[in-house]
Image (cartoon, rainbow, N blue to C red; front, side):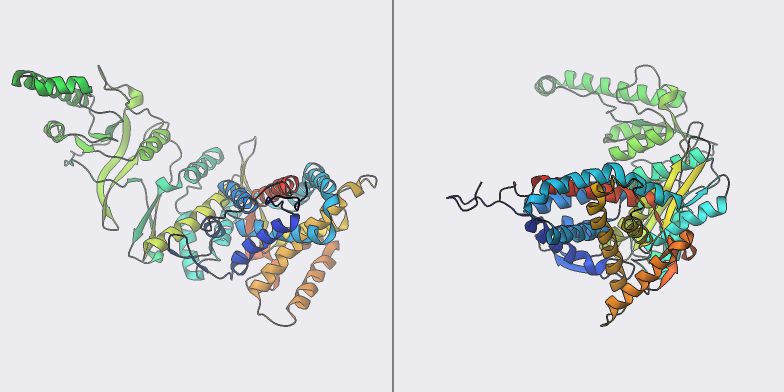
Length: 550
């Protein structure tokens, strides 16, 4: 279809995708790396946003262009799995599109699609094996100290770009204390999995004290005050049930109208019936030694009086997500219908304590579940910052750090849980660029030409990421590019010593160092997933660009 033949519909060429990618890259370029700057922007609602998180910036833009929305959606999908990597993603995408725009024309579109597909299916698995062969792997069973050091290294690497060294050390210590490293490997892996999938349930954000005052509690925190709190007699266990239904019988609309229009005797009989129903529920709690009733719906005042007369504490208006999490963690069932005879054993929860606490000036309930079948338990993490905005930023950073730690863990077929990481500071990018440039990814000479172009483009993109990081962590000088090329040649000259080659990276001052010894570690799974998502998006852009109408 010709763009100029009597229609206002204009077809995109490939340069439009490059223009959008470079515009997105410019927003986060100076914020890339451990010395990254904050971005100040104003949202469409007039809210002033100061952040260093790439995903937050992209989502605040409300992009209308279809290609731009496709890029942002791809980043969101990736972050749902990795928690981080948005800046690296858009920087690599921009570098790849620039190289394609310089070297190839419209007639090469089909060839490029085949190149991307060949790279994904044939070259990428070989690249993954190369990285895994030179990764850092430590087992919780065989080498607990190395495993803990790897755990701390990943946390510190994610948190360091955002806070000072003193705050980072305090946060790493606090977060690490939330995990129990003495558990068996499979239980430890389950523990990290639970806190990663339900992080909001384990974090309480408070405003006021300094971030260095962050602490942890040995229990589950319910951010809801007691509706009725009695001084429970000293006992070994607290038994409680969770209701997701009303104690009162729900009255249909037509019945409610008939009661309203009937005599006082009918209304009195209805209220007596409801009172008997509440008495029956309270008697069941007494017979089965239930001390606390937790409800996701409100409990009327006269029902609270009945329960108070039986020394039963009540917590109501509880969030449904808290209810679901308690049910999953304790492996018990909630009550969805009013019990007819008695509670089953699967419906009775057990806790070692249940008491009122004040956190950040807000009343909460501190509940400590216990008993057989309890899922591996972690401590509740309290994040403190002077303002709500800073609390949100701190939560985002901790969320990325814990998800990165989870991605670094591998539960093998045996009893061992291992941590698989790679040194940071663009060590991964430098290693991959050298591997793709030398052509080691393909032993067969007959197949080299099928993927050599895409391998060359991706190698250049990896070097581009390293160049941008080097620029952001060093002083701006006229010889900055020359300095980077000299350091890059130093990395590649160490090809004879493979172990040293794959540990070199740029530190906070732009100096080449052994990042493994520096303790700057990144999960291998995060890097692999980023490259995989990038190839999928590139293939989609190649197939759709030039067809999308705006």
